[in-house]
Image (tube, rainbow, N blue to C red; front, side, top):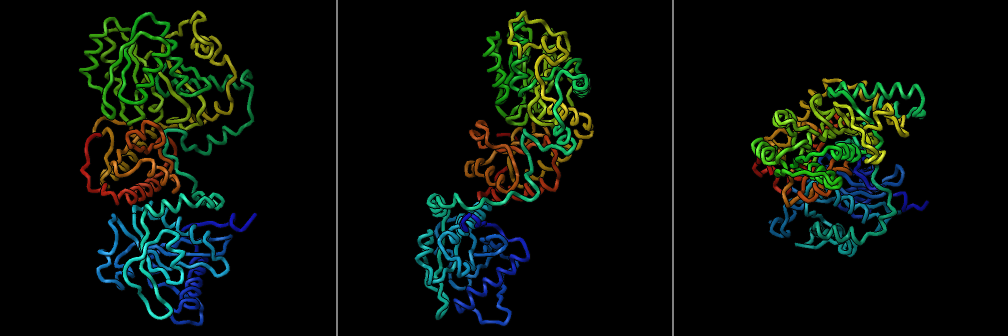
Length: 549
């Protein structure tokens, strides 16, 4: 492997790295550029050392290059130039680069570029769009090639002359686009603690669930497996108060297709409610099965209006079923199951629900619900890959009119296992259910309330507030000046996995923090602090907090 493949660009954090920084500082600014007097220790501790953030290039444990970022004013250039601010281009926030130095034996554009790209990444994360520095006049050509622009008179004396320079964010992006050679530089190391999973799925998995998944696979026809499979179904039913549950190998989409298949066996028509992406998907399920139904749509981020539902039921004629999403994951809105049952029960309308993002995160009572969908990999905090359909009646035979994989009655006739089922996924789900504690709901409520309060204090706008929302889904509407994709990507690089990639989130510039798996308050506090720093440059904190988008 070549030396270039061993280069790593990072923020200095170890004492051994700081000691090498002091010695490199001495080499550059005492021995080569006589800016400071020599000393017997051959080390130079910068006067702003306590305030500096050092970006370094390493090969193994050796520091090959460095530069320092200082964010506190007055900068060193403030001391050397009068009216510094008036010499700079328009900007939102500025920082100062200092002490750019590379070991004599490793001076090449690759090390300089790598340091600069890492510096700009750091600055971009924190909202800086301009960097200034005093560049040695010995390297002016290199700095100009990297995108720096000279301004003002030179500073310093004798052989220690420096040219004030600045680098804009657009110049950095141009440098990054030109730097194709960096495809071979080692990527930044994954955070030591591992990633903090704050997605709606997959979620962080506990050690007992991991261990259960890693067991040797069992035949889905063995007595042991069938016994444990039956127990898992009982645990699921006990959690939500349903009479029956069928476990299928697949995603929530499969579970909702099974529900659509069951509704196709009913001769009457129905009503599908939608106030977000997943309500729209229920409409798509119903359309693909050619069900007879009407729709009632509400604005994203808003709860359903009871009067509108009442009118839709009255105007719908002889309706047989209603289908809605309990937790609308796209916004976090938590639709009222009790309200739907109250409106439908007098009319004999069967209520069907998508509970994919609610079961396991909030109390759910399905004892009076006709059909409901769930999955293993969200609030139940197991691995994705299993779909669940709950019901409280005897599954109607399809008369071979449904595909075998979607025929609920076939699952019931075969004790839930008509086809191969992954024992590893089953035992992981069983382990998650066995350790499930109703205190989990209160814990999610508490940490969610704290998180939202911190976000509101920081000036973020939360979607759905003050409408009822799931404590497990906090949706943040970012202003146009801040890209949710940029924020999500940078947070991911810092070790926080948030939901931002979905097309419906990108279209609205929304980003989500989900509390469906294992998460701790300390990590969330770190996230909020980083999130706030990143967005502060766009004056997000000065925006008025609004109730809904």
